[in-house]
Length: 268
Ligand SMILES: Nc1ncnc2c1ncn2[C@@H]1O[C@H](COP(=O)(O)OP(=O)(O)O)[C@@H](O)[C@H]1O
Ligand SMILES: Cc1ncsc1CCOP(=O)(O)O
Ligand SMILES: [Mg+2]
Image (cartoon, rainbow, N blue to C red; front, side, top):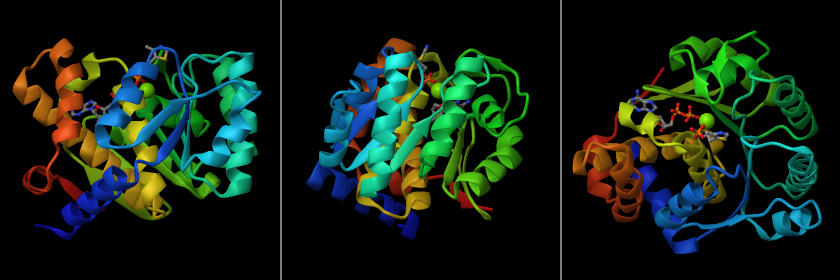
């Protein structure tokens, strides 16, 4: 058993024991998927976005996940209040810039939120990370037009700007903070055929950040667990509907042995 596999397992045990409350301001498409994934992992999710209550909710939560997938003015108002409160209280903020680069609205809101309260972890696909770093990157709505390796330089610039961790997901996941890089090669291409798998990666990162204040490790562990659970689910049945269900079961049934056997983690 490698030290990395052990360290992932320690975090999973903490999540299962503590069931940290994860406050999600997320999009209408994935609210159900990501709440179920957090529950299957062992965390306690709540999807709360009303500006009237987000500050109170942040104060009782262990991490805040902000996802801009189905933005409107009310969501933005809630995000501002929640992120400011999380910063004030020292709670981890994980940010998913879904579809940034596709419209000016998403670009402006993302830029404003990053300046207001720098996220501890940003997780996006290559198009999103490049767009967020200020490159004029092409995007196909919420899907990437580039492989994850194309966004490594952009992720490093973004990390320098926020001081936080930046994760680029894809066939290979890159987790970057300053000069540090970890690389996860687990997962399966069929994961792109289920909506919300990226959002799920971001939500699970919130759960790991709630129990591990080394956010570089927390993000690495979340991406490893995503990839391994994805592989286990595809092995049960390689089709999108089954993958969606079997992924939840794989998270719930995940063992230390499966992590040790399958983990494909390197550092660059
Ligand atoms: N080609 C692939 N091979 C293996 N895993 C993948 C592949 N594409 C995406 N994944 C995995 O699917 C999850 C969602 O990533 P991604 O599709 O990049 O996010 P998004 O849905 O935000 O575009 C991540 O855990 C990632 O590692
Ligand atoms: C399809 C879609 N449209 C707006 S948000 C969303 C979900 C995107 O989820 P993911 O980036 O995890 O595939
Ligand atoms: Mg996404």
